Every structure is written in C-alpha cells, then in structure tokens.
View: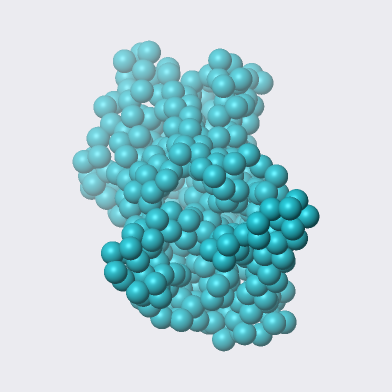
Length: 505
C-alpha cells in the first residue's frame, strides 16, 4: 500500500464507519425493494386489475372469460407480470449506467445519497398512490433506478475508503451481508403487513397488505437524513479531483484493448448470477401461492377466506346491520385468502433470505482466505448450477404433496446460500478491475447491463415460457432457465481476469 493511501486511510478516522452504516442500510434496502415484487405481485395485479375486469364484463365479455384473462397464469396477468419484472430492470439498467458515470464525475457521496432518497420516496408512492397498473409500473421504474445507482456508488465509495486489501475485503463482504438482512426484513414486513392489515389505516378504501409492504420502503430515508451531514467524500476521488488529475469517465474506454475482456466477461457472468435468482428463485412465491400453488397454502388460504366471511356475517348480525351482499362477501373472502397466502409465502421467503445471509457471511470469511477470485466464484456458482435446477424440478412434482412444504423451505435455504453469496462476490471483485476514474462506470455497466437487464431477463423468459400453463410448468421452466444461465457463467469463469493485488487509486 502506498504512503498516499495510508495517509488517506488514517485521515478519515472513525467517520468512515458512518459510511459503512449508510452503505449497509443502502445494501439492505436495495434488496428489500427488489424482493418486494415477487412477494406482492399476485395480490397487486389482482387488486389493480379489478376495475379492468368490471369494465370488460360491462362491455359484454363473459365474467369467467374476463376473470380468466387476469387470473394468475392468464394472458393479461402474464403480460403485466413480465412487464413489472423486466421494464423496471431496463429503466434501472439504462439510468443506472448514467448513475455510474455521474458517480465518477460528481462523486460517490452525492450520488449515493440521492439514489437512496429516490428509491425510498418512489417505494412509498407505489404503495400509497398507485391506483392503476401503469402507475405501479412507473413507480417501480423509479425504485429500480435508485437501487441500481445506489449499489454502484456504495461499492466504489467503500472500496476507496479502505485501501488496505484485507480490510477492504472484510468491509465489502460484511456490509453486503446486510443485503440478505434486507431480504429477511421485507419477508417479515410482508408477513406483518398481511397479519395486521385490518388494523392499519385505510388506503383507497381497503386494507391490502401489499400496499403496506410497499410503503415500508421509505424507511432507509430516515437515518440517511440524520447522518448525511457527517459523511465524507471518497478521499481518493476527492484528492484527484482537487489536484486536477481525475480523468474524464468514458463508457467507450470500457471497451479499450486493456479493459474489453474484463468488461464483457464480468458483465455476462454477473448476468448469470442474477439469472439464477430471477429465473427460478424469485418465482417461488408465485409457484407456491394461492390460488393455484402448493396444496397446503391453498388449504390455509381457503380456510382464512371462509373464516373472514363468517366473521363478517356475525359482525353485521351483532350490530344489527344488513348481511353483506354476496359480492362483498366474495371480496372479503378473497382479500383474507390473499393475505393468508402472503403470510405463508413470506415464511418461505424468510428461509431463502436466511440462507442468503449465511452465504454472504460465508463469503466474507472466505474472501480473505481464498486468493483466486475464479476459485472463489466457482465455489458457489458450480453447486448452484446443479442444485437450483434439481430443486425446482422437484418442487414441480411435489406441489400436491402436503408434507413437502418444510422440505421446500430447506431447499430454498440452500439455494439462497449458493446464489446470494455470488452477489457479494461481485461487490468485492469489480472495484479491483477498473481504474478509479472508471470505477463507477465499469461497475455500473457490469451490474446494470449485466445483472439488472440481462440477468433479470431470466424472469421474463421463465414467465413467457410458462404463459397459460399450469404452475408446475412455471417451476420446470424456472429450473431450465436458471440452469442455462448458471452453465454460461461457469463456462465464462475460465476467462475471468484475476484482479490486481492492490486497488488502483
């Protein structure tokens, strides 16, 4: 480590740990925001498509046909599910690339701060104000833009605050572990939103758990507002900026002879890691959930719906009111069934996120022991290539087995370990292979074009292949897509460049 780096490091003092706190919060809530959609997509589409179904019936379409278009697996449902997964990813990828450029041009601190504020406010608006699917899509695009920019700015900032190699590996590894805590938190938020929905304030005349879950995304903005005045800029970036030595960032330079291999290979393997998650793992809530998923969850949802109808009738009788109409009873029953289903799928998701947390912590420990970055990646990528497809093929054949749900939880726990650890790998690896003036731009290209666009396209592919088919086919196609992405990643890992020993400032 150079004398210059040493002086930079020692000059920051304890304030740099504030950066770790903010970065950890950002990592936690970017995954929190991303994992919201798989948890709430079914009740969200059901709620926001209800007026459309009524209009179709009023226009002369048969009720069964109109409802079937928007039911899970129906043509319109699949169309909007694909758009909600993929269009925000495209928006995040494109604007995230711009955000990476701005990170190199304007500084790490400023861009990180505004990115967290953007996705927190957009998440609040999604739950509080979205009344149409188009409004939901627009707000989700804003959420993705904030998330995609935040990751790049935070990783560059942390890498430059800790120039000592082993210290940097630990800091990046352990702060990124908070991403899995974010996944666990969103599962808990959805669980409690579904459990206590009836006791929370009315939003647009209802107590829909998905709205409360989405609104909870505003939480990271609170500590940020309090801590923001104490945060330092990246000392390496600030010093070069002050000395007039900071080169102008350029996307074209990523494809120069010195960097083209690094750019292309990291982008494509980053996509492979995300493809495993979005092609299969993030589809599990849809595979399991009521009304066409796992037999045990369907039974729990049906029981909750009947109980809600009975309770509504008894309450009206006790208060001397008219018995609710059949339409009202159906609405009450569906909402109660959907909330009960959310509780069960959130429980399964908690197992996935606990596994992800274990994977990230395991990575943080091994990152300072295993020197070869290729070996480190393959340690998780190769088992994931085998285990995840096998798990989802097994799930497809056991949805009617009432005893299988606990085994699915253990399976998704292991899948979380193998897949989520790869995300920590990229946060540690990418800052080492791009120079300071291109660090944000290079990270952004790999993470956003690779992970957010090419990687999340796996969800679009899985849903497209499964359109109009039984939910078992969704699980099978998820296995195929995840396996294909993982195989590409394993093959390309042989061309993954080993990074320099020291971080270039």
